Image 1: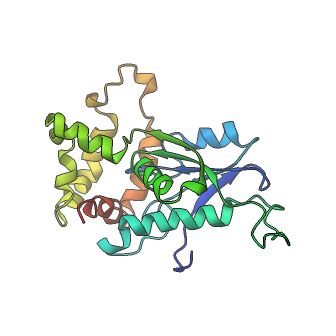
Image 2: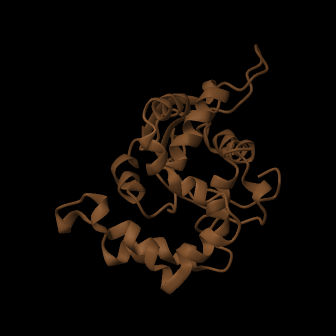
Length: 229
């Protein structure tokens, strides 16, 4: 990173292959959700990179709300694509045009917060995104229009307003060894009827490990604290 911030990622596949960049959501990291399976599935055809977003997992966690503004998060992703998105052996400058033979680009895959960032990156830097895959993250304009027509969505999204408060969200989520987080991840509200398809104890522990580290919770909530400027 130009700023000196260190971001952690896990990769699989040849460095000469096209980049597939995976962006996780809240409150995840590169391993939880399904990225580890995609690394295996697509690692023979792509250079698959599962990134820990800033403030998550093994990536550095700068203090303060301002460190998690949307434009800062997008610059992180832009630099990752800039560095990893040009296959090795294709970055030589041509004599005729004096520009790189291959521009950095990727197949961008995002879930939840990663999906929102993917939408925004594809809008601001369309040349960097060859294909866009979004899960559980409607386009911001579509989401705003849907909420305007369906006020009940405000209730479903009420946690976002709770997350605007200082210190209280951190307190509620960490009480009783993160019991509320465990309920959110495994409770009946998930709608998963088949117990074999629910998160395993190992997967829940992976969620909680990052959040329970010193300074591990506030950065993830600071993403939300910057939603309204």
